[in-house]
Image (cartoon, rainbow, N blue to C red):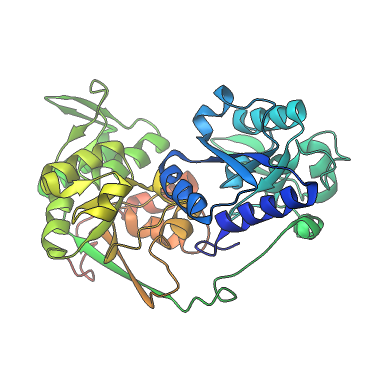
Length: 401
């Protein structure tokens, strides 16, 4: 079911119907991400089913809680279990719990296969009787349903298992409820705006030295970019005004230029801010001071803005109280793009305004071009783009604020 269409209450209503059918109260364990716990608990308590006893836990604490007293396991944002070709530790834990306690299982996701149909396999492989149960492991499944290709990464031949057949989704259809925002009555338009801000000279200087020498010595420590991955990461960090040096465990603030721009540009508005790197929250907090929070309840009940890290805030929460969403930085993941930009959507809201604050001549425009096409931004893309970034004259056609 697409985001904001009521997955939580649909899953609870499903459990309620099962409880009525079985003629007994069911104990339900609802598993989600930490940031989403408060809102989900509030919604389910408002629903108030007398047939269910619901407990809540985040994925990181899952190994500490389950016992045989639960009958149903609801797994929110189930695509987080979809790593392949090998299962993640989280997927293996969930499979072990289902095997041990014989839970009924409900999987919830607005994007069950955000990058590949192959992501379905480890979401369901631990559930008895799942439609792929005849395959002993992912590799047997891939032999039947994946066009396995070979690609070179850093000079090595690596097997690519992402080209799974659409038949995988067809196998899942008898077990799936699908629901779109259009079917739910949404008529919301998301209007995106790209704003460019000029980086200060110290940012340009550091990036030029990294591009040429692969290292930049600062009084606070050395910035090392001796590989393509490191150069991509350091350039990405610096576009937000921060950087992780070899010596500083917590990162270094080079400039607050983006936060200063956001505070001025969105003065008088209540905004939700998404950032990428942890140190960027410190930058935002230094500029917005006590007008900024990372707590959803405080955001909803006060006039404070909220700042959330993209990956932790992209799923399971509502920012409907915001006048606009503002991206301080951008994530390399296409999943992050498509999920996080929809956080303000409600049935009553006709327009959502989403603002991307990019560094003129920086990496963010290139990342945006990839993720809007449902492609992750990778080292392959960066190697093609790096010589075009932070060059003199690169911003001639860009309106900078």
